[in-house]
Image 1 (spheres, rainbow, N blue to C red):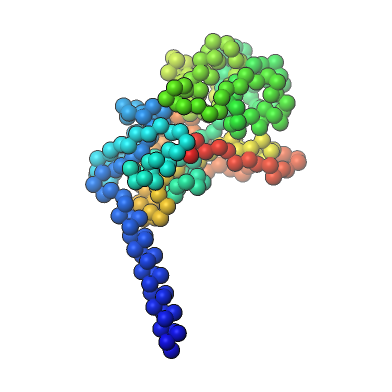
Image 2: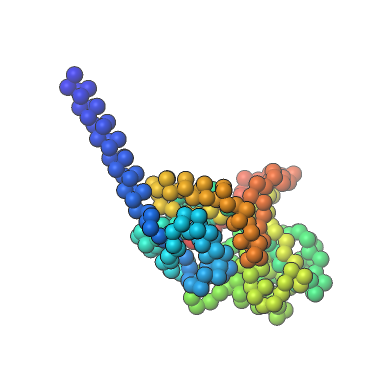
Length: 293
């Protein structure tokens, strides 16, 4: 009887500890302000002037929650999540890749992809990553990013002008350098993030009539993952906060899409069809590098 009593008491104590732990996680979320962590200079995503699409989505969320938006700015370099969200300097990251194990992800509100980008005036007819014309073109790609697997598969690395993978965005913006080189003719075509490519093309005065963007979607052909879902991110254990954000996304997806269109973000359907298969199916699908760590 005494043993049963001790076991029951232990179970009650464990349940109490679990509830308290969960409550403390919930209490960490500020109910008076929407505390957002963001990069101060990372357009088209965010900046200190509030010009990015993530800034606009944060404004929409703040409006729906009826609380002011306040920012904790920190550059998206190694340690970004550790030094912001995990230190409770904010309660939400507006944009982070789905499946990132550093945060608790919400449902996705956007799907984007890497792609092939070239200027229409240059007479390029490429419409797929194995187009024969690529063998005669100078190709720009950021070393270590998923498109390099496509180029390796089709033996095109000899045509590549590589750009550094690791960099400090406070000192250099690789995406802008790639687009400048495309415009200046140092490369004929670039394989890079769609949102970043389109932003810098638009910034340089090139609208959709002057360039071609061809998305690279993930297939079953062994060249790695090319398309990614973007979610919001919160701290582990803050399940109620996550549920509230999921509800916001579901109820306001149309308005979120309008924000993305306004900022010229090339997006893919959130509900893609079946992955395309090749004759020789491979299990070599490689998980892409998350944009923040």
